[in-house]
Image (tube, rainbow, N blue to C red):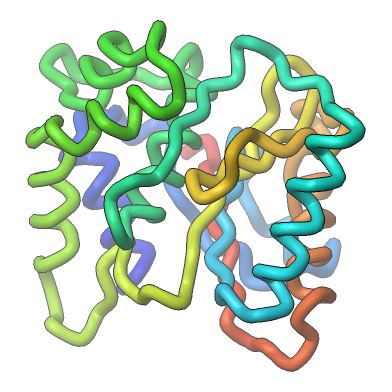
Length: 220
């Protein structure tokens, strides 16, 4: 299944299984209560529609005009590899929680993060283009299992973003955008609910769309 691909990808990148991806089955409180806590990141899969692209342009212009606070400790990278939004979503989720992760000694992701920490978002994107260990891992996790199961990066009209808590603020990290989006204050306790509120806004902008899927990076 889709989720198994992600779990497999974590394992191949050398991350100890004390954090695992779990499905968020619904946005209602009783369904959110089924998600194991703590949650350190939420990944949202959503369709790129005309409505969304219009919103994205307006949002960018508004932020450029008004400004926003983004902590320098937020790890953000641009997406230059076509269809790599799943990989970049995963890197955003892990990179901004790297103090909580247990990496294997020879973890390819740990090395990538250490090497790229001082880089700009654009340099990180270029580095990923040349960083075979992660590209190859992603390719192999994409092609394993049933042929009809989508890879974590597949569909061109579907896109992944990561939602993370850095320093008590909820950030949306999307490699197609020029910068992280600060969605306001959050806490470890309220993070899942706060992140789901952001996901709901995506859904409200495209009410006739059904292709939304949220997964949480939860303590195992």
